[in-house]
Image (cartoon, rainbow, N blue to C red; front, side, top):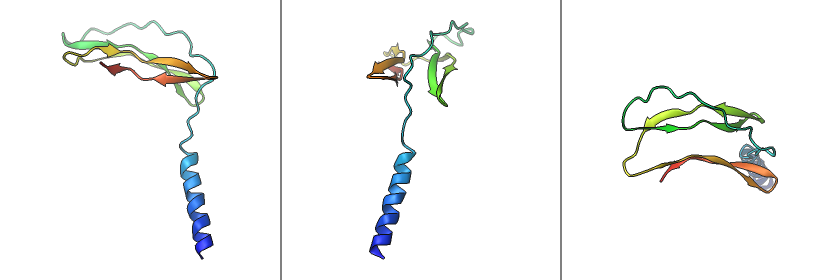
Amino acid sequence: MKKIAAVLLISFIFVLLAGCVVNYPRISPPPLKKEVRSAKPGANHVWIPGHWKWSGGRYVWASGHWTKARPGKAWIKGHWKKKGPRYVWVPGHWR
């Protein structure tokens, strides 16, 4: 009975971990698109530029948008970084 429980537990853990595998692209993203910005919604807004994201085994464009600025902080835009044979997304953030 203990062997069956151990096998079931190990199988369950394996199935959980298999869903955590991230598929990183091996090809560089396309050039950034030129975006037309909508009217700035307010004086305290910052434009977050669009970028390519990896989804379903291909690059998909995520459009830019306005967001409220954070006092004393600057937006550092995200970018793709080559790590070995793959590309990984470094998210944008406030600094």
